[in-house]
Length: 117
Image 1 (cartoon, rainbow, N blue to C red):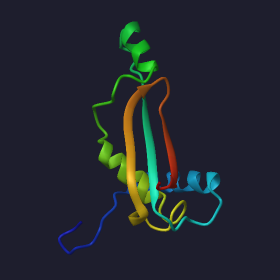
Image 2: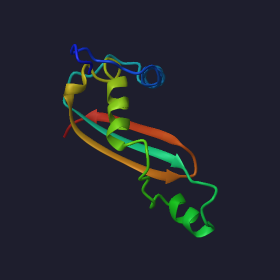
Image 3: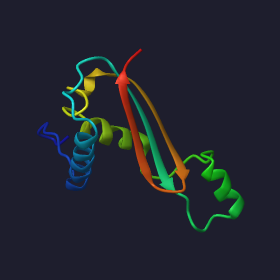
Image 4: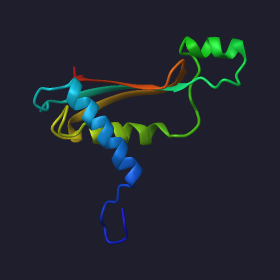
């Protein structure tokens, strides 16, 4: 937020939100949900080539957390903002978030949104 009280979204963040929004619109063609929502997020980062075979194997099984940047809270905010108006009417409907950052064989982001139960 700027000193004047305006919200500023950096261009790189805005571009990432737009990519996520476009992909979500392809996968989710229904009207945005208007119910309490649970979001589950998996942020997978490619296993570094410099790691030992043993550490790579443990990472392939999903047991090595990703503890470097980007921060998990920033990734969650990026995705939840991008899904506004596409999957749900407004992100204030989100009442539960389960999110994790792990090393996996390939970088990817998996998102599941469903009615809170």
